[in-house]
Each structure stands twice: as structure tokens, then as C-alpha cells.
Length: 241
Image 1 (spheres, one colour):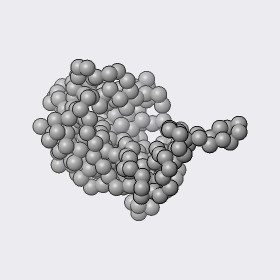
Image 2 (cartoon, rainbow, N blue to C red):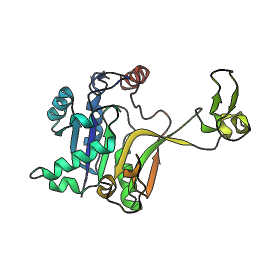
Image 3 (cartoon, rainbow, N blue to C red):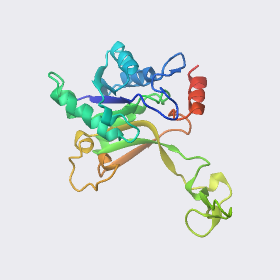
């Protein structure tokens, strides 16, 4: 069974207002994510969950299923997994879409117009091969490594290590830092049981929907552009043009 993509596109944004439908590379931002989903061989239906009329219009023009995202799931404190679960529950109540709600699922953000080719299929392949609960994409942290994180006293200016007793862990060359990765927003693939919080023995918390058996795939630094600031929008515009 092919996976179902759930594209999340809420209307509100403090960093970049209207970022999900903002023009980037000559098209609305969400259109790039829809294209990425459409090009994935392991994906079937593409569902867009949104409270934004413009995003809904773009999604319908692209022949996507549109789910109206309720107000309580569209604020800046609403979690992505709660919105995705609402989408699944809505699918289950919709006549003719019950097979789509069995999973697996892919969560995609509408504000990510740049992803490596084949990323979605790589995540779904690992999900199936490893029998994991979830697969998330990561990017190298680069120079923003946790070993180089410090505390700066706002009153005195004193600098102390974030962890341990030695500033910068005694490392001064970037190439000597151990590999470290951070979620890049490119893709989250997961089983229905994980998303719907139906797995036993999973500790409660904001990341419970990843389940217990978690896997990751890595992307080159800068190959995923997650638009959270005007600078990100400029970078995406440059790459896509």
C-alpha cells in the first residue's frame, strides 16, 4: 500500500507572515511541496490540512484532498502531530477514503520549498525496511555544534561552557568536531500506530508520535530550506531561480 502525504499549511506565522503561500521561485511556496509529494513513487494520495483559503485553493487546483484545519489546531501553540491526527481522523470519517487512513504517512511542511530529489522515497524505504515507527530527516549542524555552545551571563558577560567544564570542549577546528545532526524539516515518515499514539510503552511528551523505534536519514548541509525567516525566503528564491 502506498503512503499518504499530509501537508501542513496553517495560515498564521510570526516570522514570515503568509509564508506557505508566499511567492518563491515564481510560484506559491506550498506548490513546491505538492510537487515533491507528487514526484514520490511511494506516495499515493496527497492531503493538505489548512485554515488558509489561498492554500486550500492552490491545493484543490493541484488535485489534492483538502481538510479544513480547525482554529484550535491552527495557532502557534498547536502541535504538528495533533493537526496530522485530525487529518487522519477526518479521512476515516470520509466515505471512500478509509484506505488512505491506514498508513503509512508522510508529514510535509508547506514552508519547505527546497528538498533533495528522492528524499520522501528514501524515508519511506527506510521505514519499511527497518520496520521502524518513524523516520525523520536530519542535516549536519555545521559550525553551530553543541560543543561550541556557551552560556553568557547577561549581567557580567562571563562565558562558561553549556556543558562540562572546558569551553568548546577544547576543540578549535570545525573538522575535529564529532558528527552531530539536527532535524531539517524535510520529511517525517511514520506508521499510523505511531502517529495516532497507539503504541504501548511510549513515554508521553511532544515527540511521542515518533514512537520508540526511531530512525533518521541525513541530507547535505543546506539542501533543505525551511522558511522561518526572511533570510530563508531569500535563499530559497535564489536557489529556485
